[in-house]
Image (cartoon, rainbow, N blue to C red):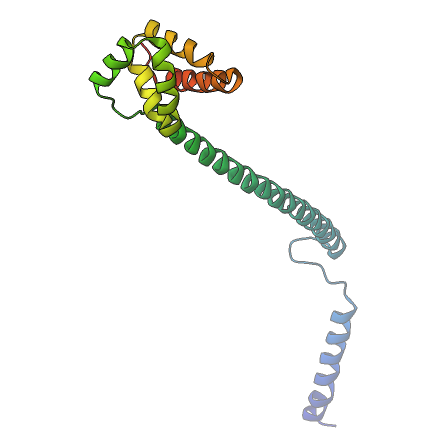
Length: 177
């Protein structure tokens, strides 16, 4: 055999021996980390991620519940504000009274309370706001005498109620000193 043939036979044998020797060696990671340790770390991380996802879902549910409560409270507050605004508008409407001619006020003040009471009763039947404005413009003592006579008219229960309603409205509409 010549040299050329020997080289052709030994070269593949040497390569095969090198491959077998390399495959028999235990591979070592480049940084010295073992695969088992990496697997353990990955499992720990997966558990932590699952726990965080669970906590996140629970927090989202709580947030949705709180958001619903907030929306209900907001709607309730808006309803209360609306009711308050309507009440304030009604109160302001009660406080504003129609202007009454001062001559009419003086006329009622100069009338005998026995005669003024039925006239005031009829006026209240026609327009209660005008009657309230008239009483509010009068001197307190004279208005009191007329209301006293009004309460003791034909139907004391009904007339006393009318006197009370007129007095209440005068009290509401009279500006504070």
